Image (cartoon, one colour):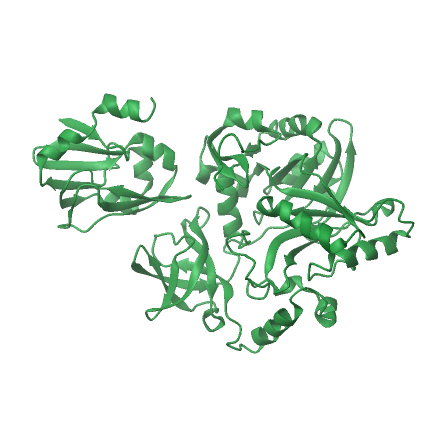
Length: 122
Length: 393
């Protein structure tokens, strides 16, 4: 199981031809209390870097970008009903969507955990 | 202008905030604490249930007064300085009682709002001829220049923004402050008094705030600011609150944020602030933009469509917050715009304020908010969203 990261603070967990996507712990801490999440429709396809979801804290709205190209095959309805889950477990039960990978080679361009830690100045 | 670390000013209590704040941001030229470690929702709830301490030293406290040695009797001195500030504001300042505060606005010649502010009359006979005037941070230099210009030498501005201005807000504010400043608890909402204290020097205190809760705004000299803040924070019921929760609290209270809900094109009538213009001033019609504003008062009373827009409260039906800049539609036509919006921790729901034509400005009317291109149904509601709990009477 491989976890990769984007410069925009999404994480991607690769399981076969599926990519599970969420926002990083760092991003969730920066946002603060999440009060609203908007997820894409099942079956919708996104190109890498496209606006895919929205996450809003009490203070501001942020876009979540597709870290890789793919089709939405599952969404985490739990975080729509209880957005606090994104703060409680951003890299676990607070996942956003599962994408069916269009081009697995896109994953090679993402950061590994060490590179991401450097990126956020850790 | 971009805010950079080099040009930002620091608050007098910066060292205290450095220890406790978790998120900083530039605001009106100051480097300000946005969040403390517990976060916006916890800070907001704490203020509504206990007492929140806000450092609002970036704002523009000042004294607007007659020249020294004016030689007038106290009552005449007040009437004189009040008549000078009335050149710019539409409220009745002359008939303020000693120790009374009024919320008002600075107007331009077109009847638009240059800033909103508090004007207080001192209670001491020897202080008559002075007014305590608190303006917004982002407008303070321009406001003070406007006041000096309108006074044309008849009165002067003495700025007091070198001092710390602290707001203590919430249901426990009185029981926290009164032991430190005996007598402060006897003040009523929208009154003003000065207290000489042994430990903290002279404190200039207003029973007022920007949260909808009971509370105080306290001006303290810089050399006593840290000791005073520490004394308040020594109380288990007091926590520091950042600018983030300050905004969500004022929005729940239906209070305007200058530069967002108010601007130089918006009149007090459009802003649903007609109550700030007392009868004497309406009859005298002697304030800037009086022609427009008095016509709008008539249009508002008769529901005439010549009044372009009114500020209203909006409750989205779903969970999506409608923030500043979101268009308001009715049957596909754009009819207005959201000027403030976010999430209400108290109501656990999104809330917004915005401007719509008077025909729509009725509680219960429904509209569409265009959030990221999608229609979201919303209802017009009366303001405030959360009832005020001021200490009146």
